[in-house]
Length: 430
Image 1 (cartoon, one colour):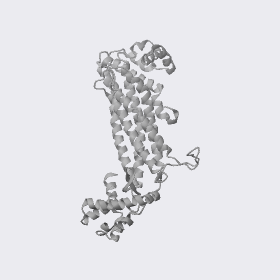
Image 2 (image 1 turned 180 degrees about the horizontal axis):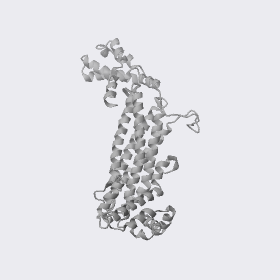
Image 3 (image 1 turned 60 degrees about the horizontal axis):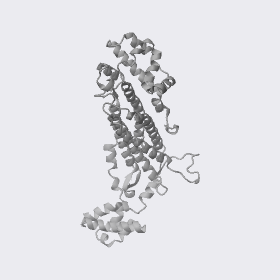
Image 4 (image 1 turned 90 degrees about the vertical axis):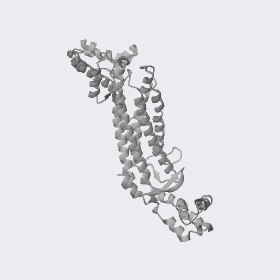
């Protein structure tokens, strides 16, 4: 991942140093259990535990000759172990180490992403409660609909991100797998008890049937959930971008004192963070299709998935980490303009009351289609002539047969459309 979107804590997880450390830990646990079962000498297991170390540069140099990273790693570590090295990597195959370590790395990144998700959820909830009664116009298809509150809008994201947390917990559980079953997964060269022992030590679960590798449907689920999280982030980012339009300006990203919005136009204050989140979300979703394609391998294994995962996994998890941190910072520093919300809410002279007027006419005896037609005619005059909705209704003769000018004014002025906000918060947002 390019430095611009990289945070050191998560980058370290995908370093060669961390990967080889995990490999070494797994190999030591395998030797430990093999010695306990009498498969290898206890002295060999002790020597492996005591002396197993590696040098990344030496491994890379060896790999240029062996063309096999695990063989290069084994050769390098064996040099430090000495005579007992013949029992290092005894009875296991490369995927036993690679895939189990991959599970650990995914769990490590998962812990960081979970923490970031939790922070976003916390901030969404705080702002949803703070702006419980901050009235604004709700929009469908981008067009004024009926009033909502900004808090209720944010509450929608709060629950969406809570669902994302639930999905992500399931995804982490899905990839928390240990597979140490030897070539083609038959345990022909490795005692099944070793897999159970290593899994317990690493807080993983043994794979049901490994086929030699951990089946990639597990990883596809993990990346699919990251894709959903990315889409949730983009949904919020697009909301901010729309609400920050000059003619709307109901919310705005923070704009620091020395910040510049444009190289050409000094007046510009662009929603660059939200646009950045939209772009990163597209990138994260791009991992979903390759991860689904990785499920399809030849027979018990091939390595067509390997190159994809080496590139995709670090970059996508790093990007997800960056995206969530940026989202939370955007939320915490968001500028909210209730006066502009009120201005936009009232800009069409009560047009959003069309349903209430229609329902009142039905109560007064009109058939629904006629009531709809009358109110729509008044509304279209407002759209086409930029006139006040209330004025068009007051002058409509058919409407006046059932509703007086005073009746219409009372309906327009009534703020009862948000009467159930307290109920929603009391019963749903706890």
